[in-house]
Picture (tube, rainbow, N blue to C red):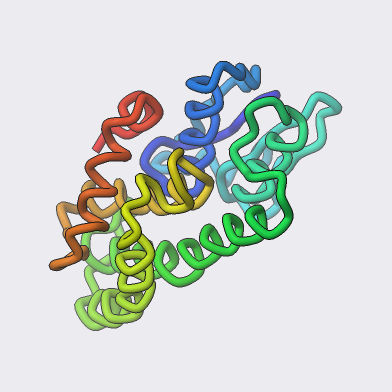
Amino acid sequence: MKLYMVPLAPNPTKVMLYIAERLEQGVDLGVEQIIVNTVKGHHKTPEHIERNPFGTLPVLQLEDKSYLIESLTIMLYLEACFPHSALLPKEPKLRALALEIERIVDLRAAVYIGQFAHATRSPLGRPPDPAAASNAATSLQPAFDYLETMLSDNRQFLTGKKPSLADFTLQASCQFLRFIEADLFGERHRLRSWDERFRETPAGRSVLKW
């Protein structure tokens, strides 16, 4: 399998973190990682559009030459293909809760972090938009409050004792904030401790560059 990706971008990064964590657990997924240079517009080439009509990353090329083009779908596919030491719980309720936390992180925090970053110091060269940045920062506060409260039971990571899909999704966006030298955690000490703890994991050290 081949993962077409670009370092720093949150959606590819979350999949890269997932692959690294599975490797740390002793499961080599056999995924070749191929960089697509978005700064040079390589994600808009006919070759990449053939892989993904939307021109986004990541893209996972499967053994039969078909493609998966959404980060969560890619992680769930790899979970199903390599069930040994899988990261999602097997028990239905626990599995549902773990996926729910990932969805909350993605839809209620990561989306706004991306908007904030591009309105502040866009890696794609978009002009600053202070009003949009302010709106995005305000919009993600409820999700950060939710996560801060959730961490009050002294869990090590967002769903328990080991990194999860939710951790990868949030940390991929946190790296985006570090890249633009922004800190939106405020006085949320538990969330800040989680951030530091994850960055010291083997997966965090091997994938995160900021």
